[in-house]
Image (cartoon, rainbow, N blue to C red; front, side):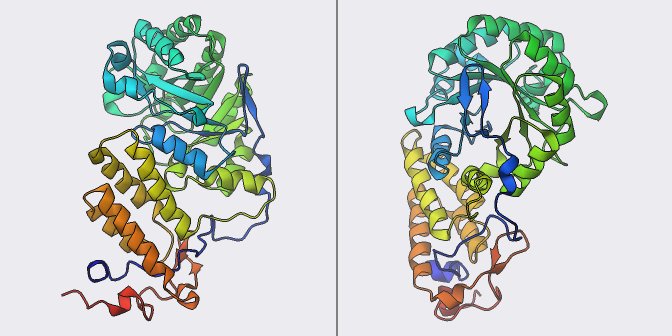
Length: 397
């Protein structure tokens, strides 16, 4: 039985609001986030971009983000696609180009090191219907870097310049790049690479303020993003550590960037784009309710089922479930239960049971209190709420 296995699973009503930030603040803090920017002839409005993330920003997740933040995502970017796979007609690589009409405008990101293959792959992406072609010059993953792609391209600026010029000649849609601050602290060259890229034909540059050596440790350096913005005339999109409307405001004020690219912040909170837009407009800022979080997971399953076999759907649902089931009473036990599910149907049943049991709890037993991480914590997590599954379940032996 679910209640016997996970006695602390249900501790709040499904309509308990999980605020975007526990700290009170005035509305309109994100007013400094730009309204729009242009990538060549393409107007991106609002100036918020879903950043590319390998294994995450597939068609299902991109559609989910557009649905959870309607009208608040100016541009979505695909997970990166190998130019080797595209030019060698690898079926999996070509399937990664799939996108729905509701996703436009969409940028498809490609990675690799060979100039001719990059140009050929860019044409394939354009023919697939991409509004923008983006070249990954920032991925820090060893298997990409060792083959000359990703952040390694920043250590070969002359080669990268030839690549950009070759690709630009073949395209009619805008060409953009994503870079990092540099390879390490001793070789920060984002400004020089950005200036070169503009001359070579790039229409926009996204800058992640960490070095390749940092990977995702430490903090993104938004002063470097500001330096890039001052050095070029094309749009500069800042990336790194944008996890809330407050963070969006702070990053924009520090950098003066033309827009924000949000990656890991959207993995846990696909509503973040709508929250930033609402805050910028002075509207009340709130996080998703527990019911909304559970509904999103069900919707995610539907979107995954359209494009993947069950094994992939189940794995991606578990990942999404563990990321979004946070910040409300019972969420830790729910995450634990999610990791133990073996199929998408089993996880869907788990979520349904959680929602049904939570709906039976009286309001006073779900009274929220600010949590240490900006979410909600139970008033007394050690004491089961009367009448809940936790109170009814026998102690674990």
